[in-house]
Length: 172
Ligand SMILES: CC(C)(COP(=O)(O)OP(=O)(O)OC[C@H]1O[C@@H](n2cnc3c(N)ncnc32)[C@H](O)[C@@H]1OP(=O)(O)O)[C@@H](O)C(=O)NCCC(=O)NCCS
Image (cartoon, rainbow, N blue to C red; front, side, top):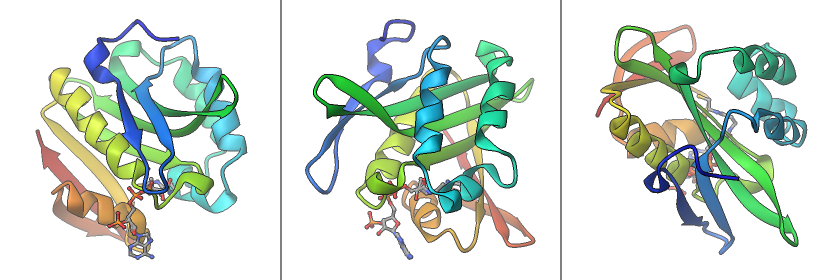
């Protein structure tokens, strides 16, 4: 179910365990597919991603937002024959009038630590650049070692810390 975005916004990714996933933008009539991803993610992963907000509540709120203000990439994996399951999402949310955006990502627990988060973020950077975003921000709890590893690998710069979180920035 593709087509609203240019083909270069899509890519295939091979994970460290040999599994292949397809990364592509989520179309706006497909948001309900994320419910299954959130349902199959651990409480710990959801807490890191959404804080104290309930994931389905967040999904309901985001559906009403302007299509220009956000992009979501999903990773799909064919688990049951032809059916493709969403195993990760990676967003940027544009800060209106600034040309900058905030990044958020979730990889399903059974796909973590296999290079998927890195590859989704790399694809998100390409999409953001093509869409004219010139600066990305991400707020990471300092105990979130996998996310810390990704922001360092992708050469985000440390901006400041607040409580137990660090704010990072990447100029595209
Ligand atoms: C953060 C997240 C998206 C990373 O996705 P991922 O697919 O696991 O990431 P990758 O496999 O590409 O990279 C993770 C890196 O962290 C490393 N890592 C994992 N645990 C680590 C630890 N305890 N200490 C140090 N490094 C660690 C991995 O080894 C890997 O590095 P490598 O490729 O050099 O081996 C995923 O863990 C997730 O969804 N977490 C819950 C939600 C979340 O935290 N979102 C981000 C909020 S800011």
